[in-house]
Image (cartoon, rainbow, N blue to C red; front, side, top):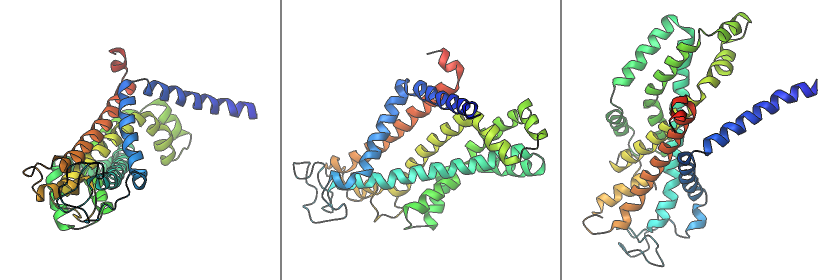
Length: 295
């Protein structure tokens, strides 16, 4: 009996390992994972990478990169490297939290109504369609103006609450194509609960869509956070890549030739976005047989 139980468990673990090996065999997946890994490690070990306080204004303003300040100083006399590595914590945490929030809402608003059907599906689908046509960034700007000077957690939640509609629409369409399958009908006739069918029968078959949506939502969250902070609609006293760009603009860094002030955070946002995009491409290639055949 124990041997019979072990065999399915071993086969499942071997299948997961095979999928992981196939995924990381893609150069895009390796490149994207490497980029994100470097930035995550930088955020985690930020206190070990610099001995300066990112909020300290004890240095000479607008110093060029040197042995004492590897990325120079800001117009307020702050060390740019310290702000850069500590700012990674806020920017990455906002992006990941916003992406997870949007994905969880999309799963609930997309899969459950499609599975239940009827008036519930009609109402939720109509609301989702309304959210789809509402422009995302202007809506964020309006909300950001009302929640001015808030923390990163609130910004992440707001971004998540406004960025779920497109993913919910995709999950709803895929769920509608699965609810009539034989194994779903058999599970219903067998007395399985709705939660069991949704999360154990339907969701595993859409895992690639969920992961791809999560990657895109995290990317959207990081870009949206940087945009809000750059426009001064977040907490400008916090340390993030967005606030670095905001203060660089306010301090006329471009006119003063202080490229070291705005290039690092701008380049970091672009690289993190590239990392998520590469992982998203790799997930699409793994999930789409046509893409695998063409490569």
